[in-house]
Length: 428
Ligand code: ARG
Image (cartoon, rainbow, N blue to C red; front, side, top):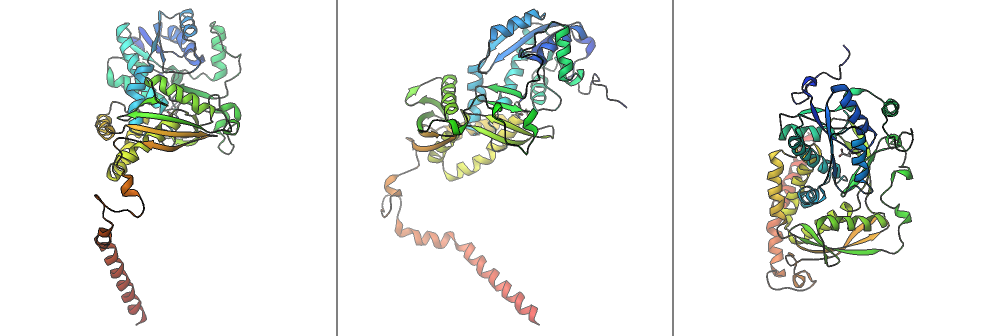
């Protein structure tokens, strides 16, 4: 039986008969522009577009709004959500040292639940019954957006036209031409699928799918290639208060501005290029190329400060929770209560993560080279070679060693005896 893409599988999918006014998550690109017209035609619906500024570099929001209106949108809304994104999404990720698959700082995954939350708010405010997005049926973003919308408002229907319309790139361009939709950059298929915000930029698809080849130079539009970065290293001193970055080289800055400035430094020094094979929530393995200059500096600096102020027990335990946090975020389960539980732990663990870390940026690397904190669990006089006194007595060490190694020494003897016995038995 051929699959019918319009068939509703999930309860939250829009009933075509009930689609009256649609809140369309609109980027201004080809897919969502074609969607703007296609939904009007296919469902006879009115469209309100929502475009969310999460710090994507080089966007002209006025142009996006004009394009939406020209294509028939009833209203075209742009929300500058950079502050909220930094404070409520990126900061918890910093406190959780969040990396998925070892290298992805989750910028897209962090942005989607905020975009979806704003979609719900503006859909209600403008009288929409449906939310539409431009995600494909193969990625994580559909999971994140639909999970959030369905969680926050079960009365809203969801439409994902790219999953159902079965147009290839060429057909989309043809549709755009027929419907007077301006196509940027001619008819040429853009070489990669890009997503970005103030916490990073990703490229997927096209030549990137050839795993056996190194990335082509045209992928990297943000970060300088390390070999072209300046020959002189540059130090940058980042101040933290309770896990939140608050200053750069002693200047206090708001989080958005601080992250943007760190990103700029990282870009220049070739910092934050990641080439990783990733396991998507929907099962596929895929190769992603990331440019994450801010995250590649801020996360190691934050971790460095934790090493200094937290105990070995806190630091080893936290790693396991960090992986859980990153997975929930990646998988689109932003509203899963376990995440709030984990955040409470992360906040508590970060309470005294205050101080400064100097990172040295040099041809693609960002390395901690100096650190200080009023809460450091570090006493130079105790650490110094040859000294004794205060809370540490070298004379106590042999007693410690005897007790600490007791079980291991005993086990070694027992095993040696057992091996001897087996050998003796084998000779009979
Ligand atoms: N692989 C990353 C993620 O799943 C990046 C996705 C980028 N999204 C996109 N629509 N190009 O979060």
